[in-house]
Image 1 (cartoon, rainbow over the protein chains, first blue to last red):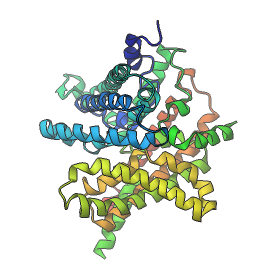
Image 2: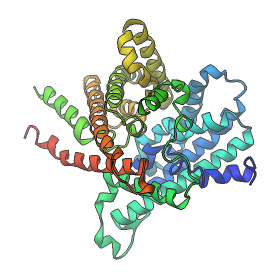
Image 3: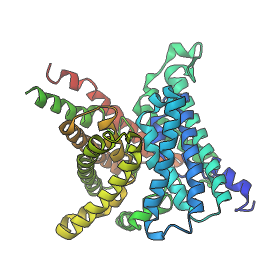
Image 4: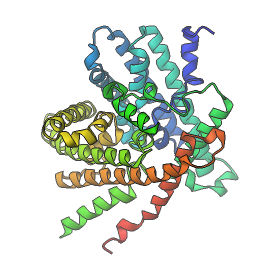
Length: 230
Length: 200
């Protein structure tokens, strides 16, 4: 498959470069909002909207923004879109706004969005960046949905708020709490690694490529870490 | 005395009960990334405490005396992230100029803190969710930072054990780390009732 064909840009976000299971970006919202299926879908779609918009705008401005100040510029663009999404959700879906709480504002510092801006949108055309945003966003949403389904079905005996007969009598509340989140996420990554064996190379060392802060630290802090390890 | 008691309660609850990393999932990236070695974990933790307290000291007055006064509350996210980014840069420059020895040990961690969601999270929480006054906000930020340091240091000890153990191939690396984090987080659940009983 041609590496740069539009279809593969769209699909790689969902499978081979899934931001949650393979690139290991955006761990904070992944763990925090997957206690319920509704919250996970809301968070996923909100982040997708921000991701598509910011990817397109950053791609449009990639020749205008000077290289040395690109990170602050990206952050301002992203924060702008996050504010818009916050206001829309507050106005039309107040219950979801309450449910997501501070995590909605924290989409600003979600590593996926800054990471994609840095890794993809800053170097590619508008159309491709939009596709990348859609693919990554859908991959993020699906991954969140998967984790939330496991946690809600086992932890609360329900799916999207609808109680499942029988399971509801045997709730394991551990899974809706913080430790359950870490546990399910860890097992999921291991399962995805097993299923895509060899094709998910980022699992062990995401390195500077997967780190949105890499541009700011110019690699010296991670390099220092890497050197000490050797 | 009552104010002092309430400050202690805020501090204890943000260090132990509502630990930012282990129960609210903020700042997971540095928690997983920089916790391999004890000295790095300590350096990162101390830098986070420092930035959190300074960021709160700056953003709280901005929210109450500028944004609220002029009806610009919706600008909160943009203004806060810019203030934090600028502040981190400024702290780095100031340390480099005046305290080069401290800069040498903490400087490498500072740029990583700009996009740390725990810092933005604590500044927003102080105003939104908890609605603390200025002193309470500072204490809460200090507590969150201390909680972060505590989690990092405990976890770095745990990780050095994992490095030496036999793990199934698929679980090597991050999955094992996350499952270990689950156990540390479970241990922190033991603190759940401590705050209510503190002055009972």
